[in-house]
Length: 236
Ligand SMILES: NC(=O)c1ccc[n+]([C@@H]2O[C@H](COP(=O)([O-])OP(=O)(O)OC[C@H]3O[C@@H](n4cnc5c(N)ncnc54)[C@H](OP(=O)(O)O)[C@@H]3O)[C@@H](O)[C@H]2O)c1
Image 1 (cartoon, rainbow, N blue to C red):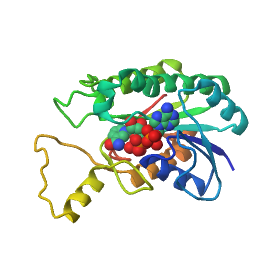
Image 2: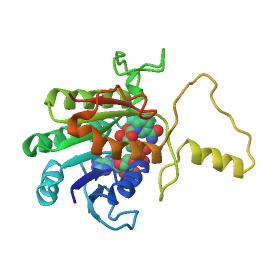
Image 3: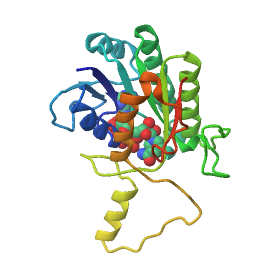
Image 4: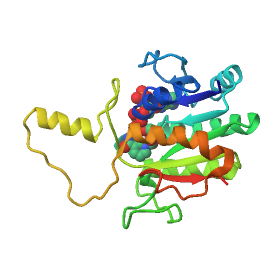
Protein backbone atom coordinates (compact mmCIF):
# COMPACT_ATOMS: atom_id res chain seq x y z
CA UNK A 1 0.00 0.00 0.00
CA UNK A 2 1.46 3.38 -1.00
CA UNK A 3 1.71 6.22 1.50
CA UNK A 4 0.22 9.66 1.04
CA UNK A 5 0.91 12.57 3.38
CA UNK A 6 -1.87 15.13 3.76
CA UNK A 7 -1.38 18.57 5.33
CA UNK A 8 -4.39 20.42 6.73
CA UNK A 9 -5.95 17.01 7.44
CA UNK A 10 -8.38 18.42 10.01
CA UNK A 11 -9.78 21.02 7.61
CA UNK A 12 -12.87 20.50 5.47
CA UNK A 13 -11.10 19.16 2.38
CA UNK A 14 -8.38 17.47 4.43
CA UNK A 15 -10.96 15.31 6.24
CA UNK A 16 -12.52 14.18 2.97
CA UNK A 17 -9.09 13.39 1.53
CA UNK A 18 -8.17 11.31 4.58
CA UNK A 19 -11.35 9.22 4.26
CA UNK A 20 -11.11 8.72 0.51
CA UNK A 21 -7.41 7.89 0.41
CA UNK A 22 -7.54 5.58 3.41
CA UNK A 23 -9.46 2.93 1.45
CA UNK A 24 -6.52 2.39 -0.92
CA UNK A 25 -3.49 4.10 0.69
CA UNK A 26 -1.73 4.43 3.99
CA UNK A 27 -2.55 7.99 5.07
CA UNK A 28 -0.28 10.21 7.13
CA UNK A 29 -2.65 12.95 8.26
CA UNK A 30 -0.99 16.13 9.56
CA UNK A 31 -2.33 19.37 10.96
CA UNK A 32 -1.62 21.93 13.68
CA UNK A 33 -3.97 20.35 16.16
CA UNK A 34 -2.89 17.86 18.85
CA UNK A 35 -5.05 15.06 17.46
CA UNK A 36 -6.97 13.88 14.41
CA UNK A 37 -10.64 14.75 14.12
CA UNK A 38 -11.23 11.42 12.38
CA UNK A 39 -10.98 7.86 13.53
CA UNK A 40 -10.37 5.68 10.49
CA UNK A 41 -8.15 2.70 9.67
CA UNK A 42 -4.89 3.14 7.72
CA UNK A 43 -4.44 6.60 9.20
CA UNK A 44 -1.51 7.83 11.27
CA UNK A 45 -1.88 11.33 12.66
CA UNK A 46 1.02 13.70 13.29
CA UNK A 47 0.74 17.17 14.74
CA UNK A 48 2.77 19.22 12.28
CA UNK A 49 3.09 22.91 11.57
CA UNK A 50 4.02 22.89 7.90
CA UNK A 51 5.94 26.15 8.31
CA UNK A 52 8.43 24.10 10.35
CA UNK A 53 10.70 22.75 7.62
CA UNK A 54 12.75 20.53 9.95
CA UNK A 55 9.67 18.82 11.40
CA UNK A 56 8.27 18.32 7.92
CA UNK A 57 11.52 16.73 6.76
CA UNK A 58 11.53 14.44 9.78
CA UNK A 59 8.04 13.09 9.06
CA UNK A 60 8.68 12.76 5.36
CA UNK A 61 11.87 10.79 6.01
CA UNK A 62 10.04 8.57 8.49
CA UNK A 63 6.93 7.84 6.41
CA UNK A 64 8.38 8.11 2.89
CA UNK A 65 5.19 9.21 1.08
CA UNK A 66 5.05 9.00 -2.71
CA UNK A 67 2.71 11.99 -2.86
CA UNK A 68 1.99 14.95 -0.58
CA UNK A 69 -1.34 16.75 -0.76
CA UNK A 70 -1.16 20.26 0.61
CA UNK A 71 -4.62 21.14 1.94
CA UNK A 72 -3.20 23.30 4.76
CA UNK A 73 -3.60 27.00 4.29
CA UNK A 74 -4.30 30.29 6.01
CA UNK A 75 -7.81 30.40 4.53
CA UNK A 76 -9.44 33.36 6.28
CA UNK A 77 -9.37 35.97 3.52
CA UNK A 78 -10.06 38.96 5.80
CA UNK A 79 -7.54 37.87 8.46
CA UNK A 80 -4.92 37.51 5.72
CA UNK A 81 -5.13 41.30 5.21
CA UNK A 82 -4.45 41.94 8.91
CA UNK A 83 -1.99 39.10 9.64
CA UNK A 84 0.08 39.27 6.48
CA UNK A 85 3.29 37.83 7.93
CA UNK A 86 1.53 34.77 9.32
CA UNK A 87 -0.51 34.29 6.15
CA UNK A 88 2.64 34.49 3.98
CA UNK A 89 4.44 32.00 6.24
CA UNK A 90 1.70 29.36 5.83
CA UNK A 91 0.62 29.99 2.25
CA UNK A 92 4.09 30.58 0.78
CA UNK A 93 6.78 29.62 3.32
CA UNK A 94 5.30 26.20 4.02
CA UNK A 95 4.96 25.54 0.29
CA UNK A 96 8.68 26.25 -0.11
CA UNK A 97 9.32 23.64 2.59
CA UNK A 98 7.14 21.13 0.75
CA UNK A 99 8.84 21.82 -2.57
CA UNK A 100 12.25 21.30 -0.94
CA UNK A 101 11.37 17.83 0.38
CA UNK A 102 9.60 16.89 -2.84
CA UNK A 103 12.69 17.86 -4.87
CA UNK A 104 15.08 16.02 -2.58
CA UNK A 105 13.03 12.84 -2.40
CA UNK A 106 11.26 12.90 -5.80
CA UNK A 107 7.84 13.15 -4.18
CA UNK A 108 4.85 14.35 -6.14
CA UNK A 109 2.92 17.37 -4.83
CA UNK A 110 -0.75 18.23 -5.15
CA UNK A 111 -1.37 21.79 -4.05
CA UNK A 112 -4.69 23.52 -3.45
CA UNK A 113 -5.10 27.00 -4.82
CA UNK A 114 -8.01 29.33 -5.42
CA UNK A 115 -10.02 31.54 -7.76
CA UNK A 116 -8.79 34.45 -5.62
CA UNK A 117 -5.71 34.59 -7.84
CA UNK A 118 -8.02 36.32 -10.38
CA UNK A 119 -9.50 39.80 -10.08
CA UNK A 120 -13.10 38.73 -10.74
CA UNK A 121 -13.55 41.16 -13.62
CA UNK A 122 -14.54 38.32 -15.93
CA UNK A 123 -15.10 34.59 -15.71
CA UNK A 124 -15.38 31.66 -15.63
CA UNK A 125 -11.60 31.47 -15.76
CA UNK A 126 -9.43 28.94 -17.54
CA UNK A 127 -5.87 27.84 -16.75
CA UNK A 128 -4.55 30.29 -19.35
CA UNK A 129 -6.20 33.44 -18.02
CA UNK A 130 -3.73 35.90 -16.54
CA UNK A 131 -3.92 36.06 -12.76
CA UNK A 132 -4.38 39.39 -11.00
CA UNK A 133 -5.12 38.94 -7.31
CA UNK A 134 -6.81 41.85 -5.59
CA UNK A 135 -6.38 40.70 -1.99
CA UNK A 136 -3.47 39.46 0.12
CA UNK A 137 -4.82 35.89 0.31
CA UNK A 138 -4.88 35.72 -3.50
CA UNK A 139 -1.36 37.15 -3.66
CA UNK A 140 -0.03 34.48 -1.31
CA UNK A 141 -1.72 31.68 -3.25
CA UNK A 142 -0.43 32.98 -6.58
CA UNK A 143 3.07 33.19 -5.15
CA UNK A 144 2.74 29.59 -3.92
CA UNK A 145 1.81 28.45 -7.42
CA UNK A 146 4.90 30.21 -8.78
CA UNK A 147 7.16 28.51 -6.23
CA UNK A 148 5.87 25.11 -7.35
CA UNK A 149 5.98 25.81 -11.08
CA UNK A 150 9.53 27.15 -10.95
CA UNK A 151 10.75 24.14 -8.97
CA UNK A 152 10.11 21.62 -11.75
CA UNK A 153 8.76 18.99 -9.34
CA UNK A 154 5.97 16.66 -10.45
CA UNK A 155 2.92 18.59 -9.32
CA UNK A 156 -0.72 19.36 -9.79
CA UNK A 157 -2.14 22.70 -8.76
CA UNK A 158 -5.88 22.47 -8.12
CA UNK A 159 -7.64 25.83 -8.05
CA UNK A 160 -10.94 25.43 -6.31
CA UNK A 161 -13.76 27.76 -5.47
CA UNK A 162 -16.22 28.18 -2.54
CA UNK A 163 -15.69 24.79 -0.91
CA UNK A 164 -18.66 23.57 1.10
CA UNK A 165 -19.73 20.50 3.01
CA UNK A 166 -20.00 18.88 6.42
CA UNK A 167 -17.10 17.78 8.59
CA UNK A 168 -15.93 17.32 12.17
CA UNK A 169 -15.49 20.78 13.78
CA UNK A 170 -14.85 22.49 10.45
CA UNK A 171 -15.00 26.24 9.92
CA UNK A 172 -18.28 27.72 8.82
CA UNK A 173 -18.71 27.38 5.05
CA UNK A 174 -21.50 28.60 2.78
CA UNK A 175 -23.67 25.52 3.30
CA UNK A 176 -23.27 25.57 7.09
CA UNK A 177 -24.01 29.29 7.16
CA UNK A 178 -27.18 28.79 5.10
CA UNK A 179 -28.38 25.97 7.36
CA UNK A 180 -27.71 28.05 10.46
CA UNK A 181 -29.75 30.92 9.05
CA UNK A 182 -32.59 28.64 7.91
CA UNK A 183 -32.82 26.85 11.23
CA UNK A 184 -32.88 30.16 13.08
CA UNK A 185 -35.70 31.27 10.79
CA UNK A 186 -33.66 34.31 9.76
CA UNK A 187 -34.00 36.14 6.49
CA UNK A 188 -31.04 35.63 4.19
CA UNK A 189 -28.99 38.52 2.93
CA UNK A 190 -26.72 37.37 0.10
CA UNK A 191 -24.64 39.36 -2.36
CA UNK A 192 -26.14 39.50 -5.82
CA UNK A 193 -23.04 40.55 -7.78
CA UNK A 194 -20.94 37.37 -7.48
CA UNK A 195 -20.86 34.29 -9.71
CA UNK A 196 -19.20 31.17 -8.33
CA UNK A 197 -18.80 27.45 -8.83
CA UNK A 198 -19.45 26.19 -5.29
CA UNK A 199 -17.58 22.92 -4.94
CA UNK A 200 -18.67 20.09 -2.67
CA UNK A 201 -15.56 19.11 -0.74
CA UNK A 202 -16.52 15.42 -1.07
CA UNK A 203 -16.53 15.72 -4.88
CA UNK A 204 -13.21 17.52 -5.01
CA UNK A 205 -11.62 14.91 -2.77
CA UNK A 206 -12.84 12.10 -5.03
CA UNK A 207 -11.42 13.96 -8.04
CA UNK A 208 -8.06 14.34 -6.30
CA UNK A 209 -7.97 10.62 -5.56
CA UNK A 210 -8.71 9.93 -9.21
CA UNK A 211 -5.99 12.38 -10.25
CA UNK A 212 -3.44 10.62 -8.09
CA UNK A 213 -4.43 7.25 -9.49
CA UNK A 214 -4.69 8.30 -13.15
CA UNK A 215 -2.96 11.61 -13.75
CA UNK A 216 0.45 11.12 -12.25
CA UNK A 217 1.21 8.05 -14.38
CA UNK A 218 1.05 10.54 -17.24
CA UNK A 219 -2.22 9.84 -19.04
CA UNK A 220 -3.84 13.19 -18.30
CA UNK A 221 -3.92 15.88 -20.95
CA UNK A 222 -7.18 17.73 -20.40
CA UNK A 223 -7.41 21.23 -18.97
CA UNK A 224 -9.52 19.86 -16.18
CA UNK A 225 -12.86 21.64 -16.43
CA UNK A 226 -14.59 18.39 -17.42
CA UNK A 227 -13.25 16.60 -14.35
CA UNK A 228 -14.59 18.92 -11.67
CA UNK A 229 -15.58 22.50 -11.01
CA UNK A 230 -11.97 23.02 -10.03
CA UNK A 231 -9.25 24.14 -12.39
CA UNK A 232 -6.29 21.80 -12.59
CA UNK A 233 -2.83 22.71 -13.75
CA UNK A 234 -0.60 19.71 -14.48
CA UNK A 235 3.11 20.35 -14.17
CA UNK A 236 3.92 18.73 -17.52
N1 LIG B 1 -12.71 26.98 1.63
C1 LIG B 1 -12.83 27.52 0.40
O1 LIG B 1 -13.89 28.07 0.04
C2 LIG B 1 -11.68 27.47 -0.55
C3 LIG B 1 -11.81 28.09 -1.80
C4 LIG B 1 -10.73 28.04 -2.67
C5 LIG B 1 -9.56 27.38 -2.32
N2 LIG B 1 -9.46 26.78 -1.09
C6 LIG B 1 -8.22 26.11 -0.76
O2 LIG B 1 -8.50 24.73 -0.51
C7 LIG B 1 -7.64 24.24 0.53
C8 LIG B 1 -8.46 23.56 1.62
O3 LIG B 1 -9.43 24.49 2.12
P1 LIG B 1 -10.34 24.15 3.36
O4 LIG B 1 -11.60 24.92 3.23
O5 LIG B 1 -10.41 22.66 3.57
O6 LIG B 1 -9.48 24.82 4.52
P2 LIG B 1 -9.67 24.74 6.12
O7 LIG B 1 -10.93 24.03 6.45
O8 LIG B 1 -9.42 26.11 6.62
O9 LIG B 1 -8.45 23.78 6.51
C9 LIG B 1 -7.13 24.19 6.49
C10 LIG B 1 -6.43 23.44 7.61
O10 LIG B 1 -5.03 23.82 7.59
C11 LIG B 1 -4.63 24.02 8.94
N3 LIG B 1 -3.44 24.86 9.01
C12 LIG B 1 -3.35 26.21 9.04
N4 LIG B 1 -2.06 26.59 9.17
C13 LIG B 1 -1.32 25.45 9.20
C14 LIG B 1 0.06 25.19 9.34
N5 LIG B 1 0.96 26.18 9.48
N6 LIG B 1 0.48 23.91 9.36
C15 LIG B 1 -0.41 22.88 9.24
N7 LIG B 1 -1.74 23.08 9.12
C16 LIG B 1 -2.19 24.35 9.10
C17 LIG B 1 -5.85 24.67 9.57
O11 LIG B 1 -5.78 24.64 10.99
P3 LIG B 1 -6.59 25.82 11.80
O12 LIG B 1 -8.04 25.54 11.54
O13 LIG B 1 -6.18 25.61 13.22
O14 LIG B 1 -6.14 27.12 11.21
C18 LIG B 1 -6.98 23.80 9.00
O15 LIG B 1 -7.18 22.62 9.76
C19 LIG B 1 -6.80 25.45 0.98
O16 LIG B 1 -5.56 25.45 0.30
C20 LIG B 1 -7.60 26.64 0.52
O17 LIG B 1 -6.76 27.77 0.26
C21 LIG B 1 -10.49 26.80 -0.19
